[in-house]
Length: 408
Image (cartoon, rainbow, N blue to C red; front, side, top):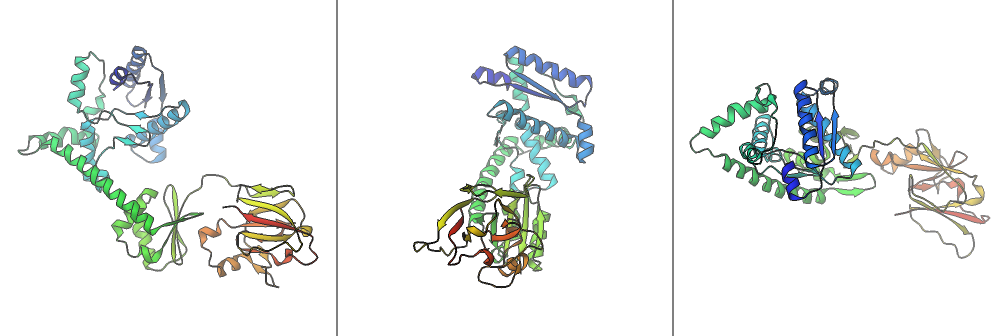
């Protein structure tokens, strides 16, 4: 691959992982790659990993540990150095072996189609060639290479497929590995078609709001378990979890939350909600001074001072709040609502718990997580986007009005 990139005139660098699993052999591999970088006069990056320690800590296999470590480092390196692509040397034999691995471990079309040529920044430009063709190219062009001795061991499942299964299949009358490769291509085409149909179906059922995606449970009930899983798999939910979601829905369990590594799903009353899990530590409160015109965090709000005269007109919309400016003490405070918060909703005389108000308004649990309150001296001015406080309402004696609006 390095020789082909060089001959094609590509600007590239070489990155090498030393997993410290084979002692001197691992170091010899690294020395070979250092020599390649010197030969082709390209930048060289290397990193050593305590692979066995990582595998034990994360309770995964050595192969999985090595894969996670190298791809995490490759992505980080590409971002730091500004590389457009990450090229790996997977070839056609890897593709065939991966098909059988996924077949025996249980997989749908997405797994059976094998290794993608392109996935995000990762490209695999040698998938068209098998191992014998690559070795022949290396010999014809006097290229040095080393083979990992672990490739000959039957310790790993992939190697047992390589050494025991594929030779038997190749010897079968009527068997043709070239046709198997063609089948992989057909599977990829069918997966692309299915993906397009699933994306369209997902767009038909789910709508987007400020928290993420939501769908009516009545529409979810029409989906088969397999289709429901296929629709949610891009969000990281596995089949066991999606089946449990459907079971909770059929049992009419409201308020239950499910998690994937990247997303959170909520069944709430008539809707199913999906949102990304936040990795940011939130600021607990924001201060707003009397000269502020607009803010973008944590909510996009505009602030405008108006004179209370004959030209003033209320806009009846939950995105607008009108407040008696003279009753305010700055800086105002903007924070998430908390248990025990109480205010006097506009149009009422008595106070009410915010939690009760949100229940009455049928606000979902996900939406409740993103409800903010605007305060003056710890008194609530506005339950943002829902109701202003009656305590700060405009009266005939009001001289200056503070208009607060939610920006689209």
